[in-house]
Image (cartoon, rainbow, N blue to C red; front, top):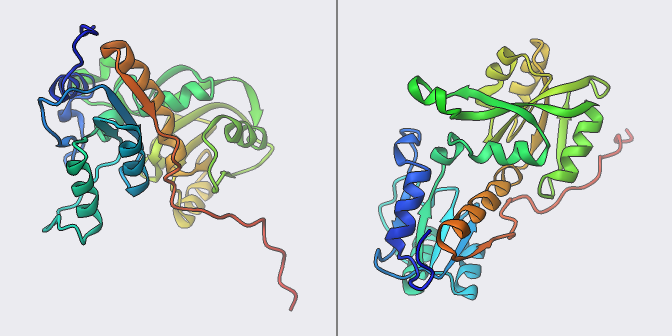
Length: 282
């Protein structure tokens, strides 16, 4: 543990994060690591966020954070300008003027053990965890991989599991939707932080009773169920990734004794959800 009499620098925290979530674990298309910041700046307060957006930048400046650790990359796609009249440019200028560093751990944190999906599994009391999509090669022996499969503390119907998940995961306007027979008994559950429809076939091959992830779409869900796949639970993207921040915060406090704040600014873009519509009277 770092000597509490001398606060860590940005470089100290970056090196520690890189060891916990090595950048080579990230997908080839991903952009992780330090985005901006002075390596020698002391870090006394860290803000953890899902998204680096104007609202979380406001929070970072308000609380006097020296470093923001975000899950989603700010600069995932190439930009040709960071002028202050562009969305991302404004964010970058505000962070630099406030002397706030920005670090990203994305798909490298997804595949880590423990990682993003472990935090979901813990909230749902899952046991006997294993990866949904194991990492290849020697990494498979470390328990790394995308998503997690586990056993529920007791069997539930799909309807009961939907309600249970809604009480355990962060509350968003989207809530929790389920697809499948509401009375089906669920014992084994796969979970995945973030968009998960690319792993529908993996959930089917794993033989789980249900699969929980974010950003499911109409046609893939319809075809998946028609093909005999497991029941599905669809959760807001933010709600599947916010729990991981608490794990990172606990580790950073233990590692550095730093003041770590976990942002509860809901960055889910959906802000309204009306009740089910009644049938239109023709």
